Image 1: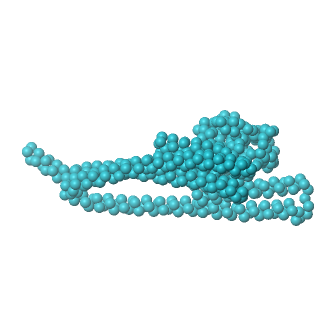
Image 2: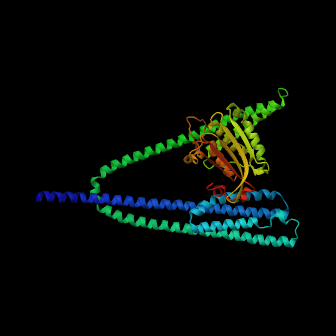
Image 3: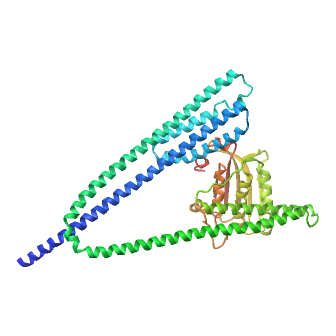
Amino acid sequence: MGGDGSRTRAAWRNLAPLVLAIGSLLALVAALFALQRSTDVLRAELATVGEARAHLNGFQTGLAREMSAQRGNLLFEDTSFVQDEREGRDEEVSTARELEPLAVSLGAVATAAYDTLRARADEWHRFPGDPASLRGRPAAEVRALLVRRERVFERVLEAGAGLDRAITRVEDGRIERLRHLDEVRMLLAVGLVAVALASVVGLARVAGRLRALNEQALGLAEEAERRRLALEAVAEEKGRFLRGVAHDLKNPLGAIDAYAQLLEAGVRGPMPDEQLVFVGRIRRVTQECVGIIQDLLHLAKAEARQLRIDRRATDLAQLVHEATDDYRAAVDAGGFTLSLSLADDLDAVHTDGRRVREILGNLLSNALKHTPRGGRMEVRLEERRERGAGWVVLEVGDSGPGIPPDERERIFAEFHRLSPERVHGSGIGLAISRQIARLLGGDLTVGGEPGRGAVFTLWLPRGAVAAAEPASRALAGL
């Protein structure tokens, strides 16, 4: 018994350094892992801080460009400054849209400072003193208004400086926490390394095994890196393939348009007016296809794509008539009923008609795909007032199976399709349509009752887009 006890104690004495070493290493790994996670979170927050400051600088730059362009237009009466003012306004709006969620993520102080900045910027935009309103007034009155307008602008700059200070405070706090974590990590590493060194003898016994495990880990890491590189190569190849296919499709479509143009020009003899109408439709549909392919190229080039928007006064009622006429043949062939309900007194809307037509085409195409033969479709165009803002609403409803509530957001994701076994398509049309709608200052939503059809609603802002609240916020909850 005494001998067994002695052997047990000796075994524990031999194992004690190993157990202590393993415990020390596990504690070190766990502590460092926890500290690293905290550090990664802080660094991500610092990246957000830097992004917020960059957007704030862009916001202030846009304001400065507007102010400078207005001065130049007033002093020199040169309309070339109008484009500079518009570009400055666009820069202000786009950076404000990006800055708002970042400011909210930085806390209540930054959010309040951002709200103050937006309020003062809106006050400056509403303040009289633009070149068009000042021309012809007495010089003394013009100077007085400009001085007051500049004071309002200085309040905007002060608000921007306040937001910058709030961002700086958040940044300083994050940096201080990072410094503290580094100190803790250093002290913890020193203490645990000291404990581990005390058990080096025990670790020597398992050094060979650790070396084998290390070699295995290196092999796994190399294999993981090879797979990562292979996945990146596959992704790049997919992007090249998509760009190549899209580029190759543009050539035959261009040829179709060219031949249709020759027919339209009467190269093979004059054509009856009815045939010229069909040739014109062929050209419009072909050009729309080219535009969609161009969007696919943008999608393949970058995740954050920027589509060009060309806003001008647009007769949406005429646009709806033309777009639905393009689908009359398909409607008649499928035995569908397509009705239009258009507001009679709707004025022209300042938007991009080609992009609106693209969205409407996608919605009509989807309705044709998902509506049973002999079903009905309806296109409605009207004005509404929601959330304190005026909107022009274009709705496309059908009598198809509808969309389940849990799928109503997922259908706007890229390449997501309902019932892919029954309906063909790339699943990208709705994703691009929503992106275009938001670039137009509006949104694209879906409603309806499952089993009784779907209703897609395109919201377009009534009036200047730059003066409207971001649509995603204004339409929240609709």
